Structure formats: C-alpha cells, structure tokens
Length: 267
Image (cartoon, rainbow, N blue to C red; front, side, top):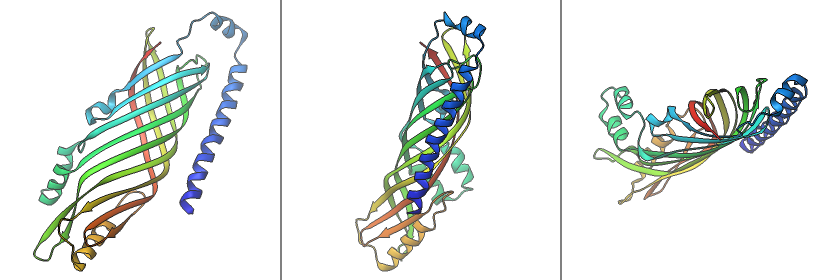
C-alpha cells in the first residue's frame, strides 16, 4: 500500500510539473517582443530532430531519440534505449575490483545482462531563441525492463560450496526531471547535453533457478539467507526456496540518474 501511494504521488507530481511549466512557457511566448515576432515570422524552422546518444555506445547501450517541436518553447521527445543481452559492461574493471576473489571473478565472467527502456518527455526551453535551442527543463516518465541470466548464488552443499544460476526479468516505472541544453551546429546538425536527470519509482521482478537435484533443508536455508543478504542501494530482495527452485523476488522502490551527449539531424 505504501509503494502504491508513493508511485501515485510521483505520477501526480509529474503532471503538476508539466502543467506549471506549460503555463510558464506560454507566458514567455506572450512576452516576446513585436520585433522578435516579426523577425521569426518568415523563418522556416526545422521541427524534427533524430538523435543518437554517443556516450553509451562504448557500454553497448544504444540510445536514440526523436524530438518534435510543438511550439516555440515547448517540444515532445521520445527516447529508446536498449542493450542486447551479453557480458556485463566494464567487465575488466569489475574483475579488478574483485581483488583476486576467484568466485566473484567467475560470477562476473558468466553473468549476462540486457535492458530496454522507453522515455517520453516534455521539454520547456528557457532561451528566447526557442525551437529546440538553448537550456531546457524536461519532466519525463521512464519504463525499463532488465533481463539477467547466469546470476550465480553460492550455497553450502554439505560436502562443499555449490552454485545455482538464476535468470529472469525486472521492470521499473519511474518519473523524473532532467536539465539539459541543445545547440545547432550549422543548418542541419544538433548537439545536445543531458546535464543531469534523476528519476524515482517502483521496480518489480523475479529471477529463478531450478536445480537438477533436490535441495536439503540446510541448503534451502543457506540459499534463502544468501539471497536476502544481497545489498541493494534501493529496495530489498526476498527469497522463495523450495526443494528444487530458488527465487529472488524484488518489489520496491527504484531510482536512477540520466546523462549523456547526443548528436542529431534536424529535418
């Protein structure tokens, strides 16, 4: 009940921010000088932007965005990001941080991760130039789905340590606010900087492992303790363990940050 109420507050706040910023942008448009209005009246503004996020390419994150100018100081953008399932990003750095722990290094080597996200947003430009140029504030919604495979859980098997690999999905729904800026490089190229965005909401998902041999009662207890001892920056994990399956269940708050550099084409 608490999480449902929290999420409802996030969504309500998102729409309140959109409404307030829309009113502010409208007032800014109305305050434009007659000279500026006359100057821009005959201009053929390019209203569509197709962009790629170049900062995520090295991490196998492929991000694209379409932006459409609605009016001088307001636009709508839709972002798509995906990472094909594969090795963990920065795997070498993660292994270096393991400080020679063989079990951790093996887990990093074997784990597979992928994700997909969709991010609609409204942008409110503060520059007098407008039409997609200058500093902006953008409230947004983000849906993300993560898929994980070969996530190892070690447990005491009586005669020694054993491992069971878990796989599954986690989905998140979040609302956020971003500050950014966009410039025009010539007539058809744009450069954008996502200075800082932060989002908060809820996440829910389950990763599951199935054993080919039944777990003993002691093994079930050890697996349960191992799963529930996993430390996350937000939310917590609960475990469901039977004689043949182990589940790590996440259902709680989720948060994240957003940033990047994008190159675009204006049409």
